[in-house]
Image (cartoon, rainbow over all chains, first blue to last red; front, side, top):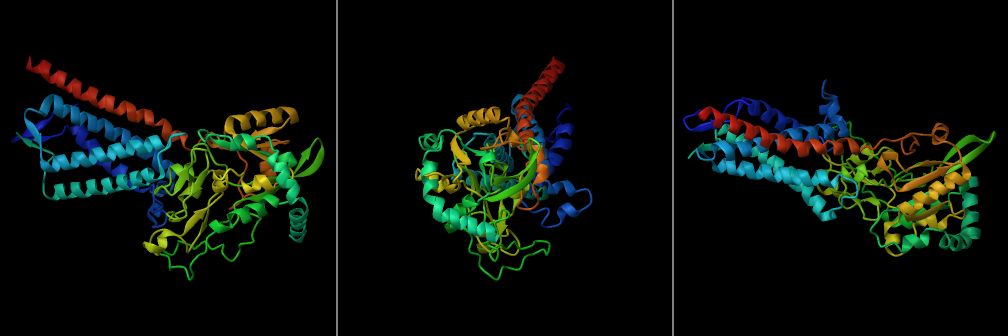
Length: 159
Length: 320
């Protein structure tokens, strides 16, 4: 892993994490929305090279793989913060909001993964709530990230 | 068709009472009724016994008439133009395939048994998979699986996107446009009706009755009971008749077990297949691939923590 680079008290994640984080989120969002029957209906899977988006099992497998990568990055970021950065840095308000949304996505996603195993039963209402919560959390997270990007708001700031 | 109708009329008039008495004596039915609901119920379909009378088809239609869609017309204009309406409301009498108004049909196969050419008839409907992709992958939770293994579609919230049909290895669910929740949302832009399929008469089971197709059958082709018992029965029957089993392992296991006197490979070649006419091919466990990837999701956090710890230790040793 590369070292954390610091500029005037503002931390940047390691290069590897930076390289993986955004593409992983993009793939997760792309394949996640692909769990709804929209790509074929709205011609997105007709775009050369994107035909695979119309295949639910393909997008589901890729979603699971990308979710594993994201989990690795989240736990790396979390424990790197706890081990190495906690004394120098603090989470900003936007960082706390994004972390909370990310936690919501991870927990609801994990429950959906559990649901998909044989003999795993949740109540009907819980499953509907879970599906709606997962997609709502994702959309909120993406919107929040967009706002943070435009407003140049960081996850952390110097203590 | 006329022959079928007259045969069915005959059966309805003459054998219905006998069928009712016979069904109550079907081994497994009592067991199913006595089940505490903690395990899956499965059905055994003994293909040898089926005479293709379609009494089950008619009973299914009668029992589920109140669940059939009554679409609102004209249908909303759909955008983009590739989205086609699926309207079976003018073809409600179609019983040669699965439709939103026909959840069970009889498939015909002419095959050779012991050197003699015979016609076998096979009742076809939802297999009620142990881990049903139609239910588990429904994006809105409209697909539901009951603890007794029945999978069903909630017509009140289904949007008719047809994902359940796309992920079903047998393409079982059938769409009817112009009905359901999508009409109250953005009917031109999202959704396209409601998906319909066999719900194995969950309401009748809840009342302590058997599914209509099983109860009506004059030949006792089907029996129902706890899955383990039905599997044991299917294996015993297969041993006894030198038969073949379908549905035990297909798609990771289903709750519909067929026993046939000829290999299913031959049956599959002999039946008419296509939209609404499911195949009898071997089916791998569609849900397993992604479920197996869950191991990566368990390993990834450990790897992340290990990487962070490694970096911390490395920085510490540098400071020393």
